[in-house]
Length: 254
Image 1 (cartoon, rainbow, N blue to C red):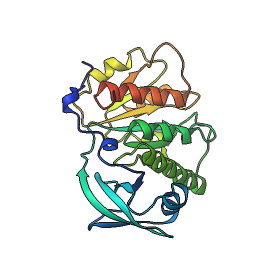
Image 2: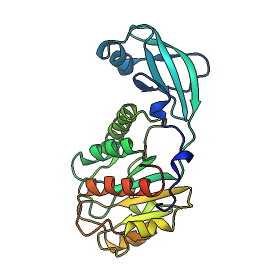
Image 3: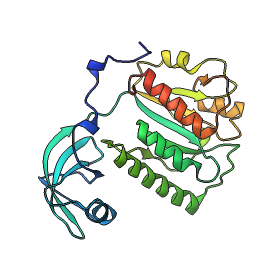
Image 4: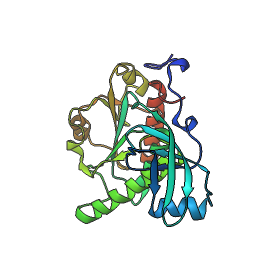
């Protein structure tokens, strides 16, 4: 068995199997009713052509997963909330610190990391980052990444959406972190480093930009460096490969 992996009988049911119908995120629901507004209401009513009585899946972002049904449609969609499930947070939690790539490459990274179950993403400025996001541009990009994460979370029926942090300087992104820095010059394979981290409650993976990380940045992260193999991967490919291998080794995927 891979390091930290659990037997199939130990895994909680997938949130995708607990509820039916299109999946939406809502604010915490205290009673037996909920309301969809704005784009969500339009998508359910006009695009999906829902009707009264149709099933809808709801998650409040804190782990509550609810089976609801449509009561009334219009500019707002009113829902009756029925069965509820409390989905515990996955362990270990997984954060990815990803150096800013060129253009909108991080949009696709956010989408894929959300689909496979990463818990938190920290976009970071590194020495070789070519994308210069400061002030309003950084805030605008962060809002877009959060919207992408929420959309991907709906599609993949997550109980909690991927959390996207503000753009952070590289050296400040690893305070108190335990995990791995993925570096093309590392000698140790990722599986060997993960074997020593199987009992941690929270892990961080560090991914560099297109030009790679400097030795100074590898030291600044304070995490053991590991290799993904003999070929040089694009930064957006490296993120998905590293995350998939880590989640598999730790029993959260596969």
